[in-house]
Amino acid sequence: MSKYSRDLKIIIANEFLSGESSEILSKKYAISSRQIRYWSQVVAIHGDNSFQPTPHLRHAEARLQALKLMWTNDWSLGHTSAMLNLSSPGLLFVWLDRYHKKGFRGLEYHSRGRPCMKKPRIEP
Image (cartoon, rainbow, N blue to C red; front, side, top):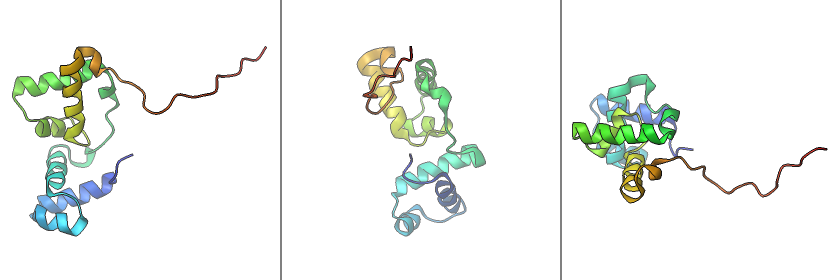
């Protein structure tokens, strides 16, 4: 779950895009000005579809394509993340780090959390 709601992100981003300073908005909402500028970049590109879930990026091949998009266009992590409508550039950074450490296998999706302790009961 995200720390900030999708609606709040869009409201703050639109305030920035309408000319309000990121420093003023940062003090008003107690959110970093860098985060506000990133949200504004995403909203400028995607509009009302900003910050929608991207389930297709759970597949390793799609994650690799995202990294290749960044490399071929010589884009920054922030710009590539905004183009892909990701919640933050940190997600793309994690994929890049895992790719450098483990190759393609590092991009595979792993479920989070603790595994279930009870085994399902088999009825006779």
